Length: 553
Image 1 (cartoon, rainbow, N blue to C red):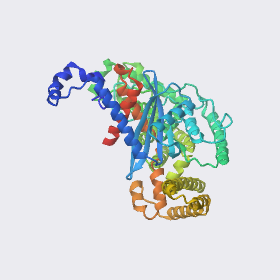
Image 2: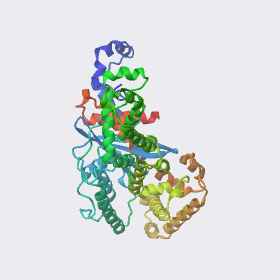
Image 3: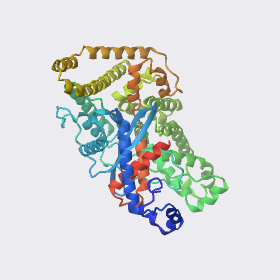
Image 4: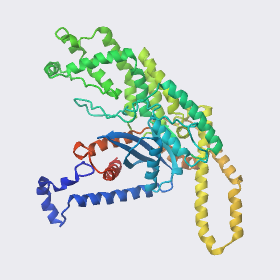
């Protein structure tokens, strides 16, 4: 009642509820109160955190982070994702109230959350964020925080206003149609720069980070992944910023507002026509729904235009509106598919590529512009070592990789394998140390040190892995409709090393929609009546609530 249904703690003491529940409580000799429920929630949250900690243990894992604002409270959401028993598992680690959105502060919050779960930062395989500059920089700070190289203004973007990149854009979610689309509260800064300026800066930063990797040996496996759903939103908004489109949308929006007036409702109902929804500026999906609804009302508008000139639109404008609808339709379908919580990298690139191909077929000015924007933004979206390594292990789509991308992916997998092997050696050494304390065989200790320093075995292991990758790449492509998890269940004996790696890399989340849904739950829990809810209790509530919701799926 408190966690899943969002009722206040004191609702357990409401007179109406107690009239119904007291006979039951007395029968079992148990009379609950608000404080008792609160203490039980805290204990339950501690128990669930321990379950999650034990479930992950020393394994590699992926993170998804995002921030939002509710009742003037800035909140950071952190989800963890990994594979267990051939299934992708998602857990909520924290909903934390933040005082600052600066990257250094966000990094410290992430570290504190990981410490709470006894999770090691070196076990983070990837972090998925939106395209906000502060989030991208947070990932970089986490990646290089243990380096001896000082990361200063020469290597990183200090101006965190650079590409907030429509940071107030909300990742679309399928919703039931309401009378009004509620506009989300803005997240982050309003400052921004032109995309071309940002990309120039970003290219310089990426070059400098490559220099850092070269200096420190590139031993950290952590990579950043941009949210594919958010990137698609930005691609479409790039197109909708066109002045001609803004003009036609403004006209459409004004007509829709008139059609939604009470005096129009009877006439619309007589023609069995639904009133069109009004859109929210930051949700292009709602703009698509508005266009679709208005096009269904075209006949009504043409009939009523002589009596009400405000709903008149000429044939050319109707034609432009239809062109816009057709151009946006493939992206709308792709956006819906990207809402799946368990998308693998292969699934994501398939959705993205199909969207581009289907949009190209429309072949009008708007569709060509959408394709251009998507192809421009996909360069940064898919330019990630973790994504390339995951795509390499997806036998349905790895044919899409270029030779250079295959080399990058192989290098990343070899580096990951080195870390796994090093963990295995460390675990063996820790076990051996227990017996060595009894025998004090100093020669054996010295021989083991030589063994640790000898690279021949490591080189042989790396070569064996590379040979396995080469054999793997020669196999025929699997069908698109097959589940990659089922595919790897078949291959685990034939490619044992790659199977171990697949359990890590295929857990890579390519969107952060589960964090967006987490914020929807926060909106439900942190209602107007509970706006002053203690931040620690809010965190406990969300951890317990999301754990049970994810387990139901």
